[in-house]
Image (cartoon, rainbow, N blue to C red; front, top):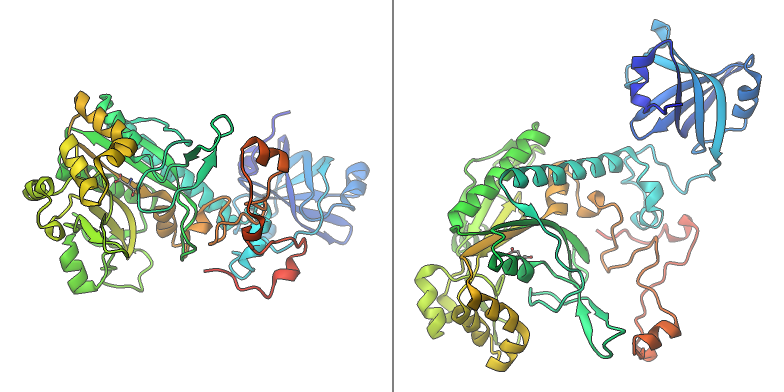
Amino acid sequence: MYRFPINEAVKHIGEKIKVSGWVNIKRSHGKIIFIDLRDRSGILQCVFIPSNKESYDKAQNLRTEWVVELVGQIIKRPDKMINPNIETGQVELSVEELTILSEAQTLPFAIETDGKEINEEVRMKYRYVDLKRERLKNNLIMRHKVSKFVRDFLSAEEFIEIETPTLTKSTPEGSRDFVVPSRLHPGKFYALPQSPQQYKQLLMCSGIEKYFQIARCLRDEDPRGDRQTEHTQIDIEMSFIEKEDFMELYERMLIKLVEILFSHKKIQKIPFPRITYKEAMEKYNSDKPDIRKDKNDPNLLAFCWIVDFPFFEKDEEGKWTFTHNPFSAPKTEFAEDLLEKNNIEKILTTQYDIVLNGWEIGGGSMRNHTPEALEAVFLVMGYTKEEIKEKFGHMIEAFSFGVPPHGGIGSGLDRIVALLLGEPNIREVIAFPKTGDGRDLMMRAPDEISPKQLKELHIKVDSAKSVKTEKFNSDSPNSVKSKKTKK
Ligand code: ASP
């Protein structure tokens, strides 16, 4: 028998149908037992009457969150009993057969609230329970819709989605790499990608012209605010374009996204204002200014572009380093200075950042596609020619086999979705997020590995230094109640 999604029940008055799901609430009125059955699509009231003895007797044992399959007739409720708050409020299921598919213990916390009142570490430990919550379920559905919109929009513009490797070589993107030891090549390590930057540029060398990927980026960051060790990026690269062409395309995509999926939101200004880094710092003292005219309006979206960033800045040791991306091209008027390594502090990059309500939601640039200029960037940063060859030889060589001018963007999907949904942090729109210090409380990762695995990987752990991360061993949610939730 076909299983109907609950929200379709209304269309089947008078018919015998099968539904299944979780017992949301059970209550008795006199001799009659009612349950609210919940599946992904909604809630349906189901009624057990004593004359239907077999199912009625079984129903007496039902408890919240048990998983059941029900067969019965959909009947129209009397007018007085209509519940206008649920989609199926006009009908109910008069149960004829009940099959119990699984029983359930009492949940560690309530799921009918928005959950924000519950200690977040407990929510993360029982994330699969937390995700039963309507708010989080909807967040995942909306995230899916945003990804699908991006895929459809870019596909219609002739972009193709290409997967790039997860096991790769260290890329200098300003963060620390996660590394993976190689069993087959003792003493050697892969790095997990901080972004697909080099691969997407190499795809431009191959003639792909328009690439995108909803890509996972992994960065071993120190615990900081709303950062996650892995985040998802809408990663795009395109050949034979200028900065303006690309910014226009990306802006158009964001406007359409809001129009189609978040039509109750209002974009403050179209086209998005362009603000130079200098102006932003002078006027807002921030390179991600919140330019909303009314900060109390939750539906106002103030996008802006920040441009004309300095290419280089001094690091803690007084050495030059890039501010955004070493693969960016300088603005044309500074091309000579870069090659000559003159006026380094004055060189501006083609970098553009996109900011929404004070959050940076992406950044990109036109790339440095001549081998000499790319080499010059690394020379300014103090690399020797040998080091450049060792680390970036493949890029410089690729650029010697015919490379089109190209540029693109990497934009944070998690942040975009969180902002559009009005969620306070990106963990609320990630199915299985980690804590600020990179722990997965549900899977208990990171974790030790067996001596056998270590041996195979040719690794010896300096046990004296083994990290003293606080282990989350408790099975009882109450034991962590006193701990402060990380914000
Ligand atoms: N790879 C850059 C980043 O992850 C984005 C880009 O320039 O495309 O920030």
